[in-house]
Length: 364
Image 1 (cartoon, rainbow, N blue to C red):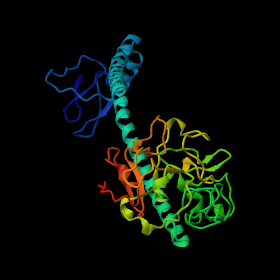
Image 2: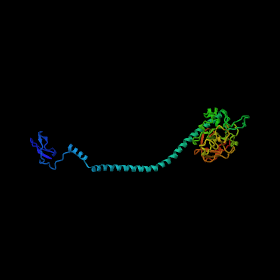
Image 3: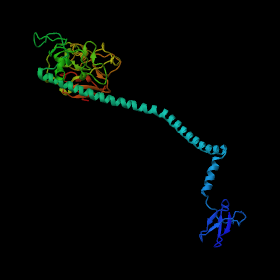
Image 4: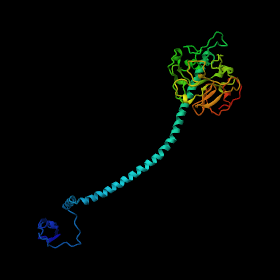
């Protein structure tokens, strides 16, 4: 620093050496004073506080940084790069940890979710099947109200009660005594058009159980049914005959009580044949009456008939006494129009099949 006196008021002034010889204004008397050009003027003592850097100094520092060797700049960049590298390393570690956790957790979650989803779907399908059976029950009651008798499985023999009254196996349009029971009730389940004019290519969803997801039409033959009529309702002593003649039974003849008598329900089907479009064991279309493919029963007998089996669908071949279905319980429509769930461990299910057997039954 250069220290000198103002020539007017003798006030001591100081300027930086780079301003030697410059003219400045005295802050006390406002007179112009020239700084000495020589650096030999009195120096500022060490205790004098350093002045803040001037703009020029800042500029010089910036210029100096521009002239710094590449090595020093690389050192600066290196520290930043190390930080970035450290950040990337932590990120990669987190990704690896989450990836390993995902590999372990995802299969476990899937294993837990799949059975839950299957249960939900089965419950929805079972609910729909219950609704189907309720509508079918109402359709059978509608048929009974009009014709004063229950529908039957179909025959091609004269009626034992009405002489010269011939019943046909094959469905005839507008004929309530032809085809199977399912064809006979079509007008009462909102299928009047198919009853008036047979169309074997048209599906009928109400007759199909969504728990099986089978094709709805037997190829070239007509609509299938997953629900089977209890053939004991017509003639318990000939229940094993799918083409037994019509005895024109009425509901009042069910002395065991309509709530204790099975009317229609799931019959057992081979699960390996679910997707077949034809040749399904003990399953046939609704237009061909008098066949085992639209009824279930068992051995003849008014009281405790034999040959009846209640089991879930499996690969085992069904019989005419096989009742059950695709669900974890058997969904069965009773003669009072209700739908009940029977456990496969239900004792003496055959007691629920006869309408006049006087058996003592335990309701599920």
